[in-house]
Length: 566
Ligand SMILES: CCCCC/C=C/CC(=O)SCCNC(=O)CCNC(=O)[C@H](O)C(C)(C)COP(=O)(O)OP(=O)(O)OC[C@H]1O[C@@H](n2cnc3c(N)ncnc32)[C@H](O)[C@@H]1OP(=O)(O)O
View 1 (cartoon, protein in one colour):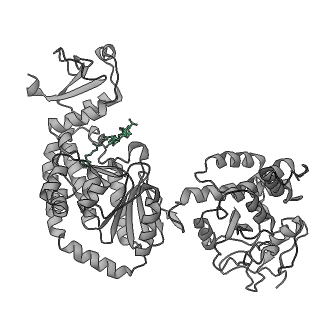
View 2 (cartoon, protein in one colour):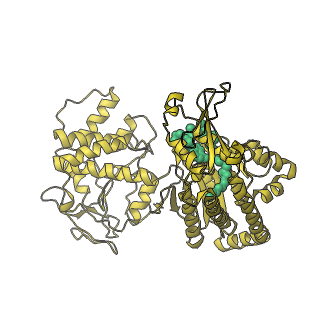
View 3 (cartoon, protein in one colour):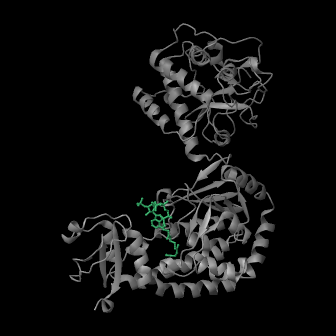
C-alpha cells in the first residue's frame, strides 16, 4: 500500500517527513548499497511484508542476516533498536556480527566488543508495548534546542550501563552532525580502526540537517537513560517500577514482584519508614497478579537489620511509649511474612544482620551469594531473637546450632547457613544475579494456583504456632528495648564515630549522635568517657569525674538509670 500509512490498532500515525519532500512509502529489498538519502527514506517505510504497519526497515543489503521485522512481530535477537523518539521509532540497525554489508554492521566489525551490545532487551519489549508509538516523527516533536543537546550530553555521563560500541558511534556521529554539520574530514586510513569507524558513522549521516541530528541525539540519550533506570542486567524483560516507595524499589517484571531494600548507603538498615513500606509492598504483591515475590537488597548488603537510630526518635511519651508502638509495628510486620500467601524468595546478595536474618525462616526459598553472611548479634545488643526465629531456627537447624547463632551471635558464612538449612543454595557472587533470576523466571512459569495451594498447605501446618511465637517474642522484646544493656549498645553504636574533644564537651557541645542518645535515654543519666576521662553530661548536671584508662580514641557512652547513679 504505497503512500497509505496505516496506524496500528489503538495507535496514532503521524506521517511526517524527516526531509522536505519525503513521503511514507513501501520499500522492498533492492540489492546494492544505499546512499544516505535512501537510508533516510527508510525511516518512512512501511512494512514490506504486507501487514500495513508502519515501521523502520532494515538496511536492505543486510537482508540475508537481518530479517525484515515488523514492529507488530517479535524482534529477532540480532536486531538492535537504536534511538527512540518521544513515542515513535527511529531506526532499526543490524547487530549481526556475520553481516558485513551494511554500514552499521561494518562499524561493529571494526570496533572490538560484543556485537550484541545495544539497548537492553527490556527496551525492546517496552517499545513494542508502548501505546503512544507513531510511525514517523511528528513535526512538533522536532524541537530539541542547543540547550537540550547540552543537557543530553551531561545526562549521558550519568548512564549506569555502557550502551555498547554501536550506540556510542551513533551518538558520536549525531553529536558531530548536530554541532558541525556534515562530515568534511578526510577519510582516515583503514588501519586506524577507531577513527575510521567514527568517520564512517559521521559521514553516513550525509547532509542530515543539524536540527534533526540534534533531536535524534537527544531522543537517543533519553531512551538510554530511561532504559538504564528501569532495567536490571539480570532481568531482561519489561519492568515497571511502582511509585510511592522511598526506602524500597518495587518492580514487577512478568510474573515476579521484586522488592529491593533501597538504602544502600545505610547498608539497607530497616528504618520505621521501611517497615511500613515493606508491609505495603507485601500486601500489594499478595493481591496482585504476580506469582512469585522476591526480596533482595541494593548495594553490597542485603540488610544490616533494624536501623539502630529508630529508637532515638522518642517523643513526649518517652522510651516506654516508643517501645510500645515499636512492638505493635514489629508484630504487624512479622505477621505480613507469616501470612504472605504466595511463594516468597529471598535473594540474599550480601551480608544480613538481625531481623534481616531471622525473617529468612519465614521465606519459602533463600538463595545467597557466597559473599553473604548471616549475623544475629542479639545478646551483644542486649536484645533477643524476633521474626519467629526462636521457633523457626531450632526447627531448621536443631536447637544446639540455633542457640549458637541466636544466643551467642555466631556469624555464619553463606556455606554454613546452607549447611544448617537456613539457605537453600549458595551461588558465586559473580553469577549470583544471573543464575538466581534465570531460575526464578522458570519457576514463575509453573502453574500459579498449584503453587499457591502448596504454599498454603505448608504454611497452615504452622500458621497458628507462628503467630503465637511472634506474640511471645514481641512481649519479651519490649522489655529488652528499655533495658540498660540495649540502650548502651545502641548508644555505643551511635557514638562510635564521634570525635569531639573533651574541651568541646566541657563547653556543652553536643553532636547529633549525642543528641539522639540523649533523646532516647530521657530520664537516664548519660556519661561520656572520652580519652580516659569521664565527662559528666552538662544536661544532667552531674559531676562525677573519674579516671579511666583510655580504651580507644573517641567517645564511649554509658547510660545509667537514676538510682544506679546514686
Ligand atoms: C519496629 C522495630 C523493630 C525492631 C526489630 C529488631 C530487630 C533487631 C535487629 O535487627 S538487631 C541488628 C541491628 N543491626 C546492627 O546491629 C548492625 C549495625 N551496623 C553495623 O554493625 C555496621 O554498620 C555494619 C557491620 C552493618 C557495616 O559496617 P561497615 O563498617 O561496613 O559500614 P558502616 O558501619 O560505616 O555503615 C555505613 C552507614 O550505614 C549506617 N548503618 C549501618 N547499619 C545500620 C543500622 N543497623 N542502623 C543504623 N545505621 C546503620 C552506619 O551508621 C553508616 O552510616 P553513616 O555513613 O551515616 O555513618
